Image (cartoon, rainbow, N blue to C red; front, side, top):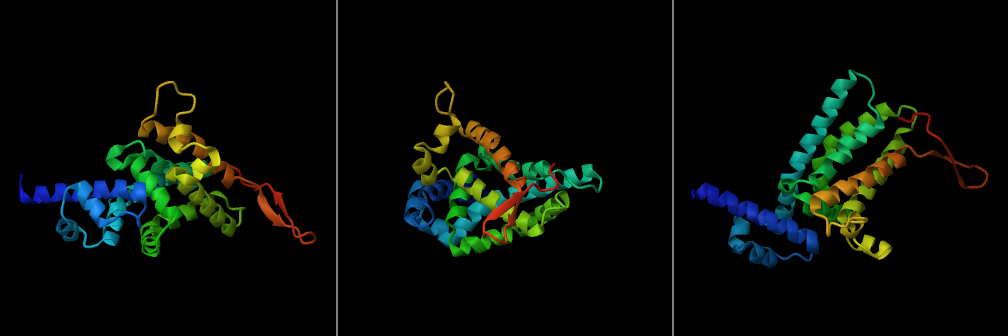
Length: 247
């Protein structure tokens, strides 16, 4: 085996192990010693390839997000080309953005549910440096999708669309994290719920991701299409009206 190939394999092994351990324990509770022990490498190897734990976590995300961002933009490009200048349907936009992410959970080569759970966990409890990292990684994609939603829902205030995108991102983050919140509220975990009604034993990650998508995507679309809030000037309460554009 060449030195270049050996270095590549070591690097990928460290990333795979770090991805799993960060998902299981969180960033703060995952020590470099824990990573090096599980990856069967010394600290010098991690420092050579990544330099620090912060840089390692960023690279764990970067190798997955590069694919995700590319696919999201390509999906939107295809839809806009097919629409020939017309607005897209909100359901198409959500499928291209959120559906592309959920399909990663079905593919182990893209990180599978391990990466999805890590992403969800990190988004719900981000350190400052990773919040800044995500902002840079997502900026172009979020801007393109916001514009697509503005065009798809011209009668909905833009500020309201941004709020709803924020809520949808939050719902997605908690849903894919599959951590303590779900256990506390329901008494069972994400995998338990995904296997509901199945006599086939514990479902694999691809099945979990598929069943999660079937439940989550209609929920997100329903939230996007929900009636618009209207402030009541006399009571201080909130009334609602149905948005004029529902596709």
